[in-house]
Amino acid sequence: MFDSSLKVRIPPSPTGPLHLGTVRTALYNFLLAKKHGGTFVFRLEDTDRERSKSEYVSDIINGFRWLGITWDEGPLRQSEHKARHQMVVKQLIGEGLAYECFCTTEELNEIRQSQRAQNLVEGYDNRHRGLTEEQKKNFREQGRKPVIRFRLPDNKELFWDDLIRGRMTVNTSDLGGDPVIAKDNGDVLYNFAVVVDDNDAGINCVIRGEDHLHNTAKQIALYEGLNWKVPKFGHVSLILTTNREKLSKRKHGDIAGITKYINEGYLPEAIVNYLIGMSWTYPGDDSKEIFTIDEVIPIFSLDNVSKSSAVYDLGKLHWFCKEHFKLTSSEEVLKRAEPFLEKENISLNEYSIEEKLKIISLIKDGLITLSEIPQQVKVFCKIPDLSNLEIKEKECLDDPNAKLILEKLKDLLNESDSLNEEQQVKDLLEKLSSETGIKKGKKLFWPVRVAISGTVHGPDLTSMLSILGLGRVKDRIERVNNFLMNE
Image 1 (cartoon, rainbow, N blue to C red):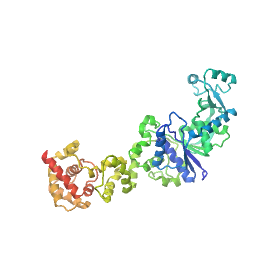
Image 2: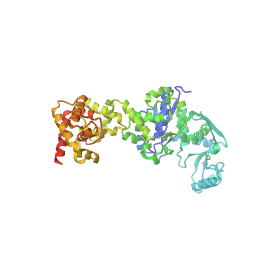
Image 3: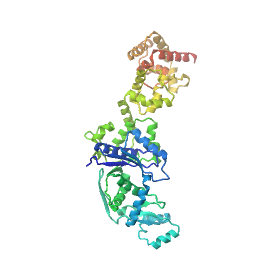
Image 4: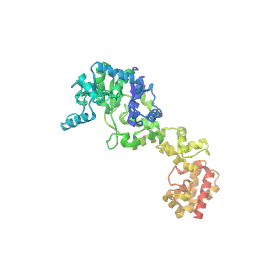
């Protein structure tokens, strides 16, 4: 169906942060263009001057770049095409396909209230389609300023073969009346501007959310009225919450925007994998869930995009994150962790690069985000504050056996030459168990862990002790023994 002439676009509006739904749609357009050697256009639909903000422009651009979504043309700005938009509006008016409407807000509300009472489709009733010049003059003398409406064909079936949903048909009588295409100040509205911009840019395939289905019908009417070639359309399902609500920036806070995931150190490849897989199934293996964007490009097809609603599941996303941390090298995780370590004033500079990589290798397979790393590695560079322990940790050191265990460990450490190898640590702990008569397990290991790290949780004890090394471990055990003696 597609070849290198394919031209798709993603046109986010900079009236808010980059939304996960926009990202997923961008990914499907990006993948489709890449697979067929087509063109992917990035356009900012910024004609809403009051709500469009420069910080949202930056958020959208930075978000796409962080995710690895690149574009062939853009970012274009819809606001730069104002003269072109107004020229087409005049063309439609001149051809009798658009007209001035002087209805007030109060009149429009009255129309809807009347329709609601009669169980009719709500919308404009096209009452100003046939105004005379005298009537227009009278309205202007009343101080009314007209909007411009596009004249929809009456009771016409508009149809298209949707690339995802199949044959779609919408009657013009269900579209809420003739749509406004330009405000009284000359600014054009979305449904009109997008048709002009897509046509002028040569967009021949539009993949977007299913909430645009009625917009698509209106836009097809505009394409046909202007005698322009209608592009192919495909509509992706919406992203819902587990409560079956549409995921929205207003109602669901920062989980809907990509900024949260950047700031908290999610791996972008995990986010990309999760969003692609929300509605797309890996061909030939519907059980395969973990993949990279480069792996998907040659096999991507809209045939494998589901019509069913996608559901945002944080637990599922976190599973993807853990799987991608397992696939990411320790070198790469360490590199990406640096800003998060600096932010928490944590330095691993006392360790060699080999030791740093051992630390990262020890913790990375259980990670969800990079922002967890400072807390996870703190044990290696921060001596625990024994006077400010949590209840469980304090109880652990208060146990009658704790003093015996830690005093005996001190003696064994003084007899040791090295702890650099994990086998040496295992031998040490074996001796500790034998000489204290306490079986290996929480009773033996927790006092050691708390003495070393200040917590009963954390990395594998054997690996942790081998990375810390004999000198650091001896210092910490000496310190905790002195602390217990002075209590």
